[in-house]
Image (cartoon, rainbow, N blue to C red; front, side):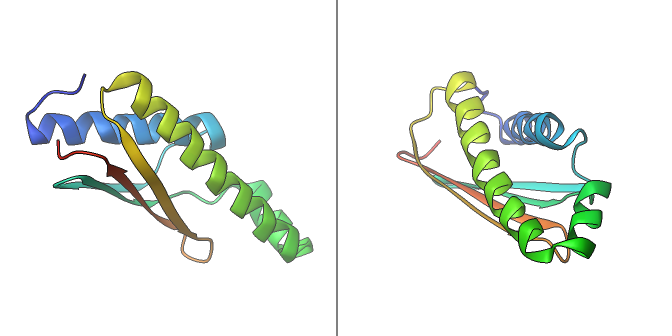
Length: 115
């Protein structure tokens, strides 16, 4: 269970988000901001560009876009699993938007109840 203290909660959430990033891409984010408002947790992140991603974009842009889409789905799944195993929160939805041009991602976790 996560602590009630908002700063400590944000620190632990940042750690979980970066763990998923490291697991999937081999490295964490360059910028990460976490906000908690009622029952919504928002992660604003800037990711590093993977060299293989850059190579794929130059050769087969449509495949790179498809890979980005599926990696985003996988990110949501893994983040949800991590949150559910390390907290007692009931998650209603995980919403994520990723812009490959800027490497920015916004991820919203909607909880069934306010934390």
